[in-house]
Length: 334
Image (spheres, rainbow, N blue to C red):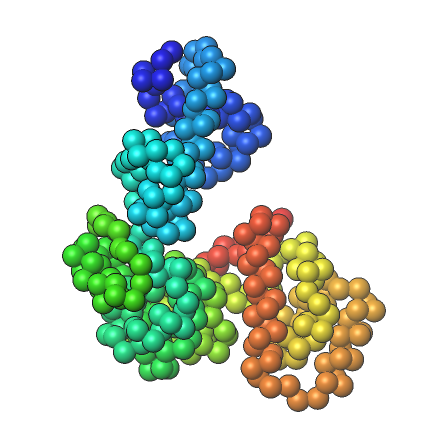
């Protein structure tokens, strides 16, 4: 079976066979059902492949991964330069061509490598729609820092525009990119690209402090109650702990310092306190209740920060598959 005769699916199937069942299973987790079915069928029908052919495909895959990493680090030009030095002009050109033909490099790649404070200086005075578009292409942590630093009267409007954003033409994206082009790295070309949406603003709000989150949600609730409800359905806030099953709460308790629980529960509802205390040992409950009683007045900001710390732990455990959090009113099946 000559290399030139192999299709992309055949190469993918050979790679999975070579990697073995465990690693292949891990890769399948990132594919949709249709892709899994096609690859499974391809693997089942795969003919004999020589060790030499397998090695070539692994090397080819490694080079593509390396090229993609270089693109992420410094853009296509940087990747091409590094690969040319390592593999020669022709080989580098071939890898970059094959990679970029199947890989959509997201706009504002240069901005995702920039400092959030630096970006803020250049976009804070722009129209809310422009800011919303830029934030939609940044990482959640970057966007959260910028959103929290905007004037309060702009925060909710920008968040709302991120949530209702749909598709933006490449001409508009390019025009906005050029505003920052003189200060940042080269910009790659793009086709029509999905950006924004409810999930994007949820990711951003999940990363900001609770004070900013509350303000933005209150403002959006006034302007667009339906949108606010949709955002809340996808978010997890401290009060949602009551919706976790006991095993998940116990898992969270083990990950959070006792001092954090005391501060966080200082301003919590009785329902939340009951959910937590029910899953703690009697001695630990008594200790935390004593801490709450004797710590005196606590600033709202400190309570919110402690609660946000716990929410971040919950979100991290959910991402790692350790626990399941309720979404949109769904009940957890234990």
